[in-house]
Amino acid sequence: MTCWRPGRAAHLLARAAARTSTLGWRHDRSFRDREQPSQVLRHAYEAFSAVVVRLDGEESWLPTRCVGWAVRDLIFHCLGDAQRGLVALHTPSPGPTDRDAVTYWQDWRPDTAGAANGRRWARVSAGMFLDFDQLRDLYLETAAAAVTAAERADPARVVATQGHVLTAGDLMTTLAVEATVHHLDLTTGLPTAPAPSPSALSSVRSTLDGLLGRAVPVAWDDEHYALAATGRVPLTDAERQALGADAARLPLFG
Image (cartoon, rainbow, N blue to C red; front, side):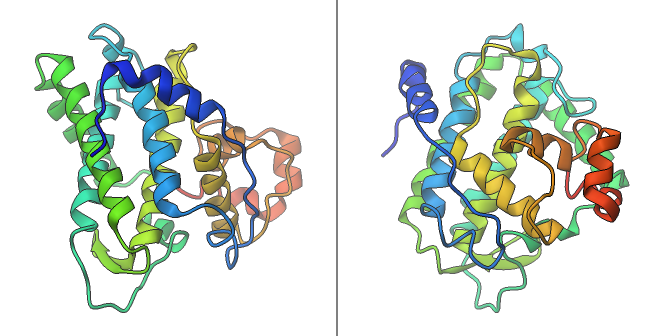
């Protein structure tokens, strides 16, 4: 059993910093040509947890890149995602699958009433934790449980989540992608915080390239690609020109 304690932060940071990015872009190959999805999820959650474990109550009120959310609100949102993953990994489905690690994101639409309600719900719920340590520790424990469940699961097993059916391996990839993008959101006001996992950032790149339908024709590193293609930083005129008609399709998800 994985045990998540404050004393593990240096170990987690060292592991995250030692990894490199090697993932190609093609949708039909990218999610088979890299390490196992459970390991990518572990890397993503360990990197995110290495940030969370250092935080105190004052830092939990710092802003994030997510509109209307402080650090604690975003951690609560990510807690819900880890809980959802934990449930999904124990919710087998007879199939057939209707989503994969890329098409899972096609349902996302910007500026919907549902998104606004979700922001409000997360903020109110996170505010009910009178002691931030309780929220922090609950996230760390839940993330650890989700990783343990992922490593014990058959990645080919078919599971259900959010009204869709996909393989457990593809579910793990979507969880890693969401955690990694939110890692960038979380640390905007934390300049000394540990960086996201390189392998998880590679999974974000593959997901975005899959949604785009080609390798992005702009010389972005993985982190900037994640920010630009999800609408977190604006495109320059030169970037819009390089993207052509695809510029109007951004953000690919939020």
